[in-house]
Length: 336
Length: 256
Ligand SMILES: Nc1ncnc2c1ncn2[C@@H]1O[C@H](COP(=O)(O)OP(=O)(O)OP(=O)(O)O)[C@@H](O)[C@H]1O
Ligand SMILES: [Mg+2]
Image (cartoon, rainbow over all chains, first blue to last red; front, side, top):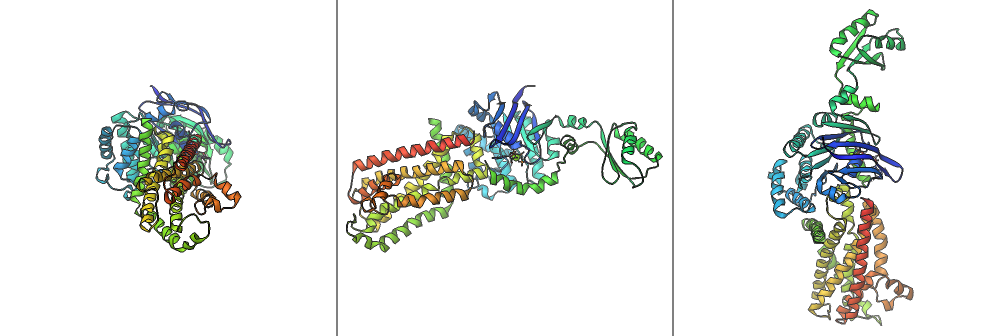
């Protein structure tokens, strides 16, 4: 597969000491949907800003569409589309004017602009409202317009920074559909960031998990889940007089069990190979040891578990949602 | 170059659209000079009777002063739109596109110049209607507007340079207010150089405002004074160019 983005030890530090992105190296292949998954402040936007030449890296290299981001920013700019995390549409203009202006910024010919504006308005279902001022649009409509603007010059790579942040479920799913359609119909490479697990899981061909400015895991969602090495079995025991350490050792020696970690209040998290067939045996063995089981759960690893596995922390969608408002306010306050 | 001009125009087009769609801004920019003219023309009439005052009425003297004041106030807040664009993410969007950085600066400067030029034209008309005397005759309106647009570009450029560095509105307003009034009072907008204390008149010679006011006042009071016009145009063009280059470089330094 042909790489279209290549970074080598790409780094950005703000004011010399805040290391927002720390020597990341990765490749994105032509035509794939590549996701950057990470919590707030992980360095996702900073990476996108470096790849779209909005900010200059403080270290390392990046090649985008065959051009050096640092030395040939103007060539990179022509070839990539950028949809920022803030919904950056001009409220005082109509949807059509916004799109056309974007076309001007990319130096397209007037007839090309007219044609593409029409096409893109249809793509994002805004034809009816095209001549209304954007100040009368809902949040979801603005975001759709914003995404359409990123496509006006038919970029080879489209960067979407948190394209569904703060949108309702339906709108999120529609945006996923647009993204998939773009890749299928136009073969565009898509680089997106998100802190929604389900989004990364169902949309991306490959995911990089980024935390504290560093990539901690990279691969197709399925492979990442396989890293965990089995299914997740949680067992909660009725409180009794057993020794936690001894019991942990005993459980670990049972057939199929890969790893055991004790949790609070007599609970244990197990990683088990072939969970469905191994679980009954494990439970029976526990019964033979004279232990009473209060509850169990068995599941295949999700990206949440992958995230926890690699970073030691949870990244949950609800948390992200609650954060979202403060986060936007913060981001605006600090800007660049 | 063709690209630069086109980019500049589209950046400017957007600003003018904003203006056009904000009726309140248009109304206020019309009302403001009317209020000032009325106040100056009537309240301060008697200043003109001070011996040595260079004009027959205070209105004659102040009409160019008001043009300048409106231009100054319009120009110095020119950088505010950058602060907004940055907050809304629109600036990042422009920076990710092939639009040249210098066009962002030039387009915004141009939009402010257009706006101030139109406003100046209006004030000029009003002042004439109120009985001000314009010695240079109808053609004199061209150098007048040229001087106004150049002057507004000087201040818009400086303000944009400020906007490239400062990220908050509050800071912008504070810094701008700190400089605006002293700029006004250290120029010959309010008082002729000859009536100022010596130290002040020396300071006024370093103030770009003086280079717009003096030729304008000549046009009002005495008619054509080619030397003064050429001097004003040259000094202001240079100053506007320096401000534009400064702002563009600050933009480049801050982003790419
Ligand atoms: N202009 C700036 N000045 C100083 N620090 C900054 C600046 N922009 C970002 N940072 C810091 O860099 C780090 C990475 O920020 P970045 O915006 O890339 O995170 P992110 O992964 O996009 O997070 P989010 O999910 O909140 O958008 C953070 O610690 C942030 O505080
Ligand atoms: Mg971000």
